[in-house]
Amino acid sequence: MRVITNTNIIVDDFGYCKSFPKNTFIHFLTHFHADHWDGMTPLWDYGPIYCSNITANLIVNKFPKLDHLIVRCEYYK
Image (cartoon, rainbow, N blue to C red; front, side, top):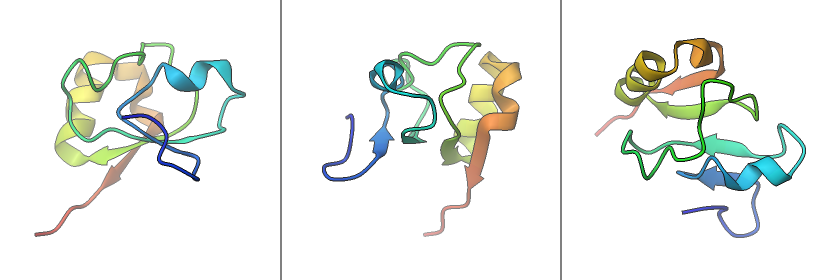
């Protein structure tokens, strides 16, 4: 997925935003499959990444320097 229509929210796409000024979009990562975090690198600095605690742990395990950009969201059933 990319930009949610008529918003500045991007879901599961970390390459699309790179042709725009930094911090233009709000980024959500639904889960940590490679096809969803494609475009994210250890040098990511395009804005905070909102995700679940489990997904956040996986991001930080792969990209430790991104920890300060992760916004951990609690999800309730």
